[in-house]
Image 1 (tube, one colour):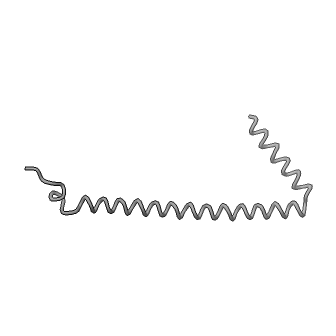
Image 2: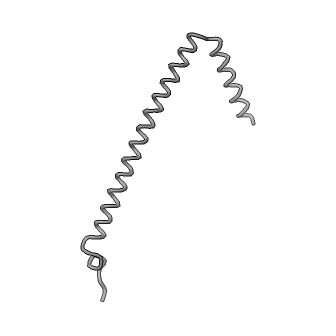
Image 3: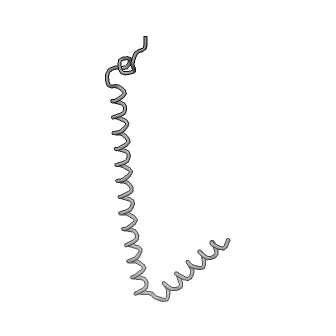
Length: 82
């Protein structure tokens, strides 16, 4: 007396669950893609702002900018070595 899963749980239940799971997965993938796109846009904007600030600093205060770059390089080198 074997009963099929579709007659035991109602007609089309397995297919409904598959469809809902697929839809949920596609929604999650779309949201992840949107978040990644927003993050990429924000990183690009920040990079542009940093580049603009560095360009302005090099133009307005070249010696100070050079010393700051040397200090950053020294710190990174010290951290890299340890």
